[in-house]
Image (cartoon, rainbow over all chains, first blue to last red; front, side, top):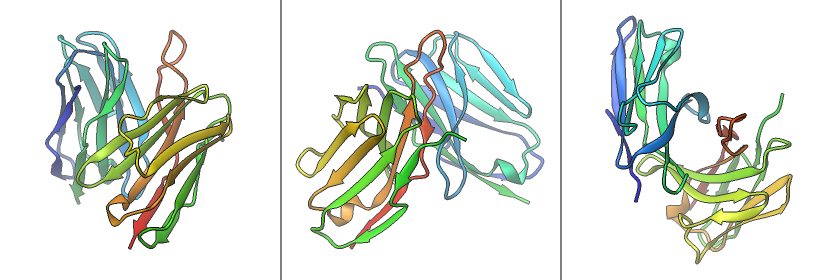
Length: 111
Length: 117
């Protein structure tokens, strides 16, 4: 079945530095979504990517969808303490249209 | 401010007891999901409803779990009997199917934290 894997699972990032988190699917995706969950909170939708090679920016966050539509990345520049949390990708499989979540990338920001 | 409402927020119970969790989806949303979150497994899909009909419950242990939507404003997830391994945060999410107008994003409730002793 469809598997969505996220790398790394945990990251410690110095405030002010940049970091990237990656998402890989075992199957081709029709689209991919990214969510953020603050500690003790619930996942909140950030963005959706649909087109092959698509790049979208939200302030310091840059989201990219791979050309083969099987991987995605989230790059955050100038990390702030408010960036702490777990970032999930969720890929929608072309075949069964199911949305499968990765296990998330837990980010800790060091002041 | 429209949001998904879940009750209870926290539940501590003893093994063998019945647990019922409730969810009120956002008005107008016709897809409802139940997810279970643990440190080990992450977010696991338990059940998925569209227009109150169950479309996918393959991730749900059938022997003890059941999910229903008695009406469009209420979804329930029941565990009977509960076991310690059921301890987790259970999230309900609602949304609209992805089409030209909608992204298909999910709106999550704040979750129900279940502890089974």
